[in-house]
Image 1 (cartoon, rainbow, N blue to C red):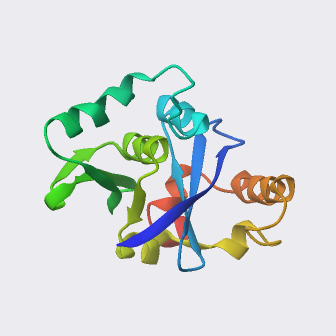
Image 2: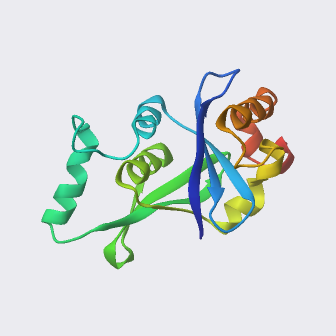
Length: 165
């Protein structure tokens, strides 16, 4: 399992679907994840902040804590037939399967770790330099232009198998 960080949240030009770009914390690969709109809006809202109204999912963490447990993070665990599987990871290593969009939204909202299975990155991970020729630390407007150029030529099906085939 590789630890990931959020690089950008963008909208795919052709499909108008939200895409979260995750990058390796200790590496050069990244992974685009097409999202459902609701979780994308949660990710766009960012970390939970007591000064803003709570979202419906914000009830989960107090419930888990009240039951004497804690949530450790989210993992994208498998890629099968072009679809990711994911889980929320609780103390003691207990995993609860959830939609990848929901797992990522919860991780971002709560500031939790995000992991991606090595096999997924080996299969469909992209070098950051392919998406951001000017580097991941380039100004956001340049990164957005670079990423839009990449997304112009890609669809969700391209991430099902190497080479899009």
